[in-house]
Every structure is written in structure tokens, then in C-alpha cells.
Image (cartoon, rainbow, N blue to C red; front, side, top):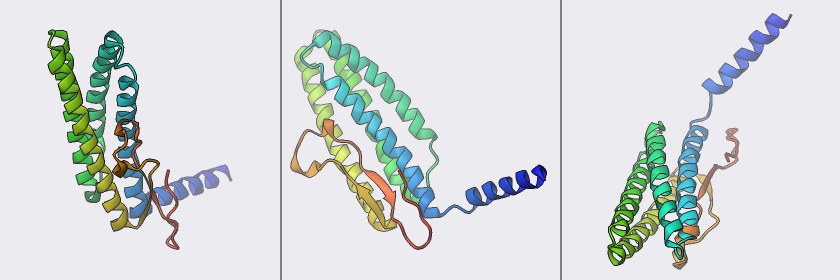
Length: 183
């Protein structure tokens, strides 16, 4: 009896995994990318808090660049559907530019080029904000194409501080094709 139940359970698991909705799969893949982007934004937010305390800020900036390099590797390992290639590529490029910019700024600061370092930090953050807006735009395009509901908790169009902006959440809309809402 238990043998039949375990077979039935395995069959149900196999069918549920093997027959998952493509829309749900894309939403899951996208949410992995969103999670990485949120980590990136969180690292910046945590680092920027200490701009008025240079020794702590430099240590945080060094730690952040190390973490960004790990996030870049983690992102590279994520297999995504063709619909998400642009988003993944943009995210990877953004992470790399951000890590490189902050790394260069830290080096300038350590070599007593404090003014150039401050300029590089500012330039890197401006580029990050531009990349963030582009990523949100790509997310919205995907949402429109796939008929996803996009939940944003921050409006980047108002010129506010993007370092505090979380990435958008993409959720599959409830439809009669049994697509579940994704987190």
C-alpha cells in the first residue's frame, strides 16, 4: 500500500514539475534576477549610509565590491528563457560597471586622490541610477509582453534617491490557465 502511495506521490511531483506553465517558469527566473538586483541595491544603501565616516565607508565599499563580484558570478549561473536574456545581460553589465567603478574609486582614495575618488564615487552612482531605470524599463516591457503584474514600491521617475529604490517585483497574473501568483 505504501509502495503505491509513494509511486503516486512521485508521479504527481514529476507531472507538476514537468508540466509547469511557461509563464510561471519565466516569472520564477525573473524573480531570481530581481532578488539579485535587490541585493545590489541593498549593498549600495548600506554602504552610502557611511559616506560621512571615510574609514568605515571605504571598508564598506571594499566589502560591497567583493559582494558585487559574487553576485555577478551568481547571476551568470542563472539559466533564463530567451525573454529574459536582455534583463539578465543588463543586470550583469550593471553589476560589473558598479563594482569596477567603486573599486577604482577606493583605489583613488587610498592613493590620496580624494577629490578624484569622490568624483568617481558620484559618477558610478549616477551610472547605477541610469542602469536601474533601464532595468525597470526592461521589467515593465517584459510585464507587458507576458501579461504580468508588476509591483513596484518606488517611483524612479520622480528623480528621488535611487539608492533606496528596491527592484520591481514581477508576478504572474491569475488567469484561467491556472498560472499562480509568483513571489
